[in-house]
Length: 299
Image (cartoon, rainbow, N blue to C red; front, side, top):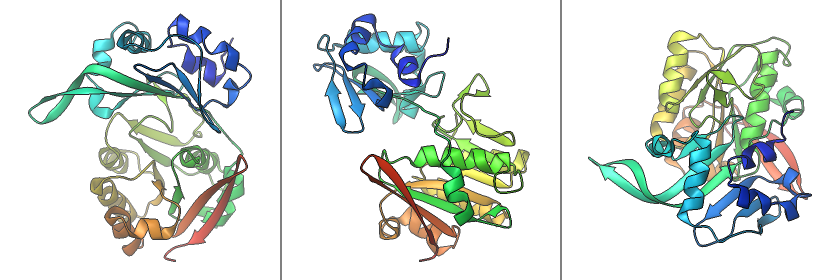
């Protein structure tokens, strides 16, 4: 029997911590993250904020047990991948790690002591793409579009559903979509198979930087649309410029609340000045609901 996303994400918790979630059972379907911090009880991030669960004050052994379960009892292999700052679980759930970094030749190679973990619960939410696609497409072809919202407002969720809709032909023509999924959140590949519905004509590169993934997709998969989550580095922007020069439509997300936020940041200013994006979707949350506003760019 399949588990709900919040149940699947909680499966890596030690038994004593899972039991402490029981008093919150009626609210767990809305849970966004489980937070584990040494010296504090387990807490659950809900849309209204963090709520403490019952159970013990956490020690490093509890955090190690989570990684042992997540890595099938090979926690050291997980810590060796800490350069990425997270570990992806089956189903797309993601464990973020913090602690004392160990460096070698200037690079972080592992964590000597764990101080906190964040288990982010992945959910497939469909039905958003039809609300937005008509405003960003023309004759069935999407304009290059940037999705803008503060953290936790649903940028990744909307981007994933746009990928699914475009790949499935909800714009009128099924298009090939290449996804550079650096953090494994969009497709949630598990041993090569997407755990999320991203459409039948979508190709995914994960486990590498967005810039590397975009380059590989352009060289090998002939995408008509390229999608990436959270542009943060100059290399990401340069790879998007290269893709735009190849005639590929782009979908991407960014943190912020307005076009002015973007212009204050060099990475986005470079893309805006180059005219890479033609549409901007701004997400606004109010009363537990999300509202989408589409603007033309440059604006």
